[in-house]
Image 1 (tube, rainbow, N blue to C red):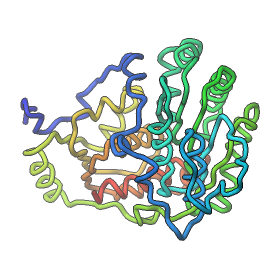
Image 2: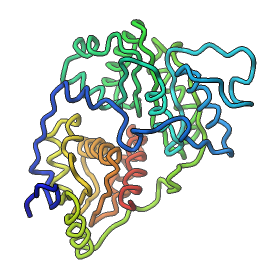
Image 3: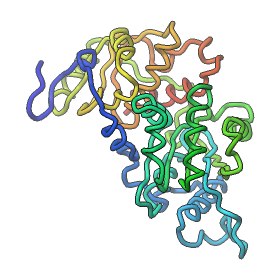
Length: 342
């Protein structure tokens, strides 16, 4: 089936070879679609977790907003010093990205950027370190979603970049991914972050956010799996109203190795549904990590996934989940479950 002028039909991602210039990468540094209109007002703090309202109050103050709610974090007459950086520390689904996007929208800044950790490191890879520094120098705000602590090289590059920007007056807001069931996850996540950015740790205020996953799905829940006939029907039906991808899992995973992660967002451009046939568990960690980066883009775009084969929450074997990239894989599992049930 060919793609029509109304962008309906079926495409194969393995046939797409997207290109993305540095300027286009910079233009894409805005909150993802589901947070395009996020505000502090639309963030509903769970009264069962006081830290959510406290975090909201602190971030309102960070952006230069009005006085926080009565009884909030700054109920004393004198506010504590607002540092140039804030780090949102908490588990999956407690609203960190919503709050980070709210910071972006509320900050009265002339030049501000919002991107995931991988988007910033991809930009450094595409433009070079010094060109990236000059690009962001003089910016008012940099928001970094899902700061990765498991890649020493990328972490070192980002720490150096942020250090130069803070020194020139840029304010920073960051989140990091931490599984909700990790032992001591709040305390240790914050310690890990501050250790990795030790040269500028004093510039960051750690903002703790407790709570349960707003998706109300356990990380170890199962993704939806379709039979071959049900998959065919779902793809065909979706293709009548939108653009649907249909790829064999192994073929797509192999194709991702030939597309830079910074271009994954363009790979799924225009899609309404992502279809994956014959899902299989990973045996190669590099392939698994590329798939995680791909799923991040799919999730940001709020695209449903339809799949056959192995349940997508089971694609990362135990030995991978027990390794250094555990946080990434658990985040991906949470997103895969949500996407297949969408």
